[in-house]
Length: 186
Image 1 (cartoon, rainbow, N blue to C red):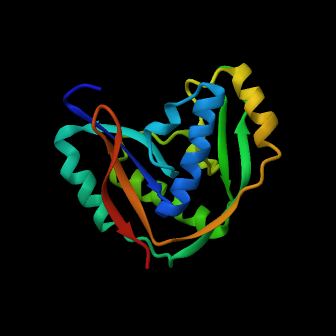
Image 2: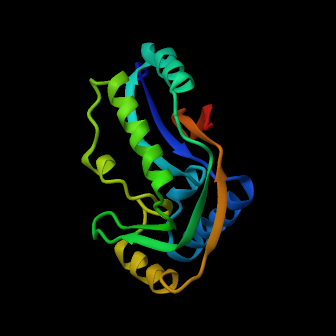
């Protein structure tokens, strides 16, 4: 990342108690399956995947985010079990958020509004086919370790719920992701 660009993404961040539970899964993956990259970010459901913009547009990005009108009430988000993206080159293990109409509508609103404001930044096709997840193992997760972990996690039970009251804009500082702004739902 050059000094002239900034890296951002938009997400739902669960409350601390649920983040702590999910971080325990990340620590388990790091300890027993040799994959710690997921520990570099707070547990989250990505609504808009990471995007890069010129540093001189930072204020515009923050202003857009803080003034975006999300015509949606707060909603209850369920988490139910675990899932995977079974890609031999880049496997991912995650906590599974239940895809509700409210969650889908929120993500689609963010993508539509982002596209209007930043039409020079392409939207990845996966963002148009939303598959919510809270990553607990990826990037440095070797496929053999992924297979071992999935043998355990596919049978592991995890159920939780939380109220989605806001969304967060995160910015990468070169080492980690930081929440720089929040936008409340109605």
